[in-house]
Length: 235
Image 1 (cartoon, rainbow, N blue to C red):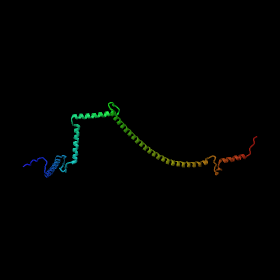
Image 2 (cartoon, rainbow, N blue to C red; image 1 turned 30 degrees about the horizontal axis):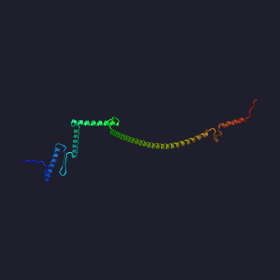
Image 3 (tube, rainbow, N blue to C red; image 1 turned 90 degrees about the vertical axis):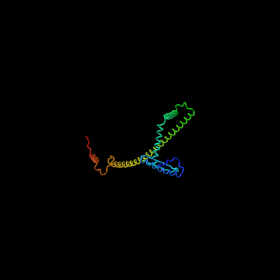
C-alpha cells in the first residue's frame, strides 16, 4: 500500500510539529549535501526553527556563498537599471540630466556677472551673499597661505643665521691660528735679517779682529808715509 499524501498545512500538535521539523530538516540537509557532491554545486542552506534556533549548511561556507549571492543580485539590479527599462525612462533620465546641466551653466554665468536680467531682487541678494561668502573664503585661504609662506621664510632665515654664525666662528678660529703662525714667521725673519744686516751695513763698525786685514787701513798707512816725505820744490 502506497504512502498517503500529506496535506500541506500547519501541524497544530506541538509535539508532532517538532518531530516533523526534525525529520524534514535532516532530510533537507542531506539533500543539500548530496546535491553539492553529485553536481559539484555550491549550496548554502539556512533554517530557523520556530524557537529561533539556527541550522545551516554550506558546501563552500555559508558566508562566502551569501556574499557571492549578494554581489550577484546587486550586479543584476545595476544591470537592469542601466540597460533595462523602457525608452521612456531613458528619455526622462536624459531630460533630468539636461535640466541639471543647464541649471549649473546658468549658475556659473550668474557667478561671472552675466545674464542677470531675469533675476529678481531676492535672487540677486542671494547671489550677492553667495559671492561675498566665496570671496571671504578665498581671502581667508590666501591669508593662510601667506602666513604659511612667511613662517617658512622665517624658519629658513633662522637656519641661515645659525649657519652664518657657525661659519663665522670657524673662520675666526682659523684666522687666529694663521695670524699666530704669521707673527712667528715674521719674528724669525726679522731676527735673521738683523743678524745679516749687522755685517753688511756700511756704517757698522767691523769687529776688532778684522782691523789688521782691512785694505783701507793699509792704504791709509801708505798715504801717511808719503805725506811724511819732503816735497820737491818746483823751479
